[in-house]
Every structure is written in C-alpha cells, then in structure tokens.
Length: 198
Image 1 (tube, rainbow, N blue to C red):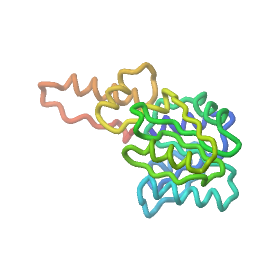
Image 2 (spheres, rainbow, N blue to C red):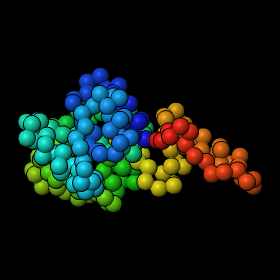
Image 3 (cartoon, helix red, strand yellow):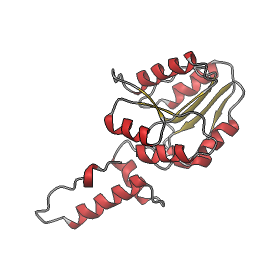
C-alpha cells in the first residue's frame, strides 16, 4: 500500500516537498527510491506522535502548510491531491474523511500547525471540531480513492473488489487466488514472492 501512495505522490506534477516519517527499513528504502525526504522516527510513538514531531520540524523550517496522508490508502489519485490544494483556504484546513465517516485520511493545515492532529479510531469528528475552533475555514472533501483505507479484512475485501490495478490490489488478488487454489490440499501458506509487500 505504501508503494501505491508514494507512487501517486511521485506522479503528482504540482506536488510540494514530500517527506516520509518512518524508521522502517522497507519504507526508508522505498522513500529513497522515490527521492523523497525521510524524517526519522526512531522512538516510534505511533501515528499521532510521529505527526506532531514532523509538524514541529515543518514549522521550524518555515513551511507554510502541511498535508498529512497515511500509508494505507492505496487507491489515492493525483487529481484528489489537486482537489485538496484547490479548495485549501488562505488560512484554514481541508479534511478528507474515511469512507465510514469516522477516520481522517487526509488533513491539510495552513499555517502548518493550525490545529493538532490526533489519529486513531473516530478521529474525524475531533479533527473537524479542532479545525472549527480555530475560527478559520475548514473544508470537508469526500474523495473516493483517499476515502478507502485498509484497516480490517472487510476493507481488504473492498479493495480487491473495486476496479483498478494498484500494486496492493494485484498482490491481494494474487494471494486470494493462491489461497483458493490451495483449499483442501496440503499446500503451504501463501507468502509474498521475493519479499514483496504491499
């Protein structure tokens, strides 16, 4: 899934500077392949702590704004990123909810630290309330690719069933085919080929 997200960011013609917050070796290598900046996250405090740390760095560097997106939205498309920037107020925020309306799958802030981000279950309503409390405009966009995050087996099944040929979809479909072919046999469990992951 991370590969799909980074590939979309790489293909975004008007993209701002991109940084990946991680200390995972696979993610670091992938970020290097795409020539994105890496913000090390050795303490690994979780998504909220990582975003707080990265936001502080952005503010210290004088960044005008931040756009935070997770790694588990493999159907993200460049036009959706353009929509976020197109609707971004001069001061304020843009939020893209998850398909179930509970989570937050993209958060744009200008200034860069306009309101705090606290990720986890049911993050959208608190984020929306925090954005509104600033007194600045907060735009809510429903974008279908960004909306699908993969948190559980039902999400994975939806990813497989939707049209598209992302890397994550291809791997998931391959695993399903292999598992189905092995039903009722002594076939070993399905493992990624050559260390490939989504």
